[in-house]
Image (cartoon, rainbow, N blue to C red):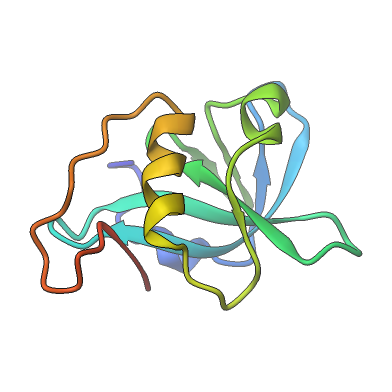
Length: 118
């Protein structure tokens, strides 16, 4: 995600899947509590359903008015979700890493959490 020095500034922009299909709108970002790097995007999906699907922040391609993620509908379809304003549980934190085939390493933080929303 080196192309986006402050992905938080992209809140409200549309997020598209690698095939060009719109996934939703960027609502929030989860950062790694130890490295302070963006790890997951919280993308609001649907217009009537108030949920956010989590998508890895790595390999995002920015353009002037949107972000494109390196994932398909199949990849994101069963991904862990949150409701706006709710934090991930510790179990969901690990589950989202595993869902996308990412290694999960237990954090060495006072809170015991790997991800923090900012």
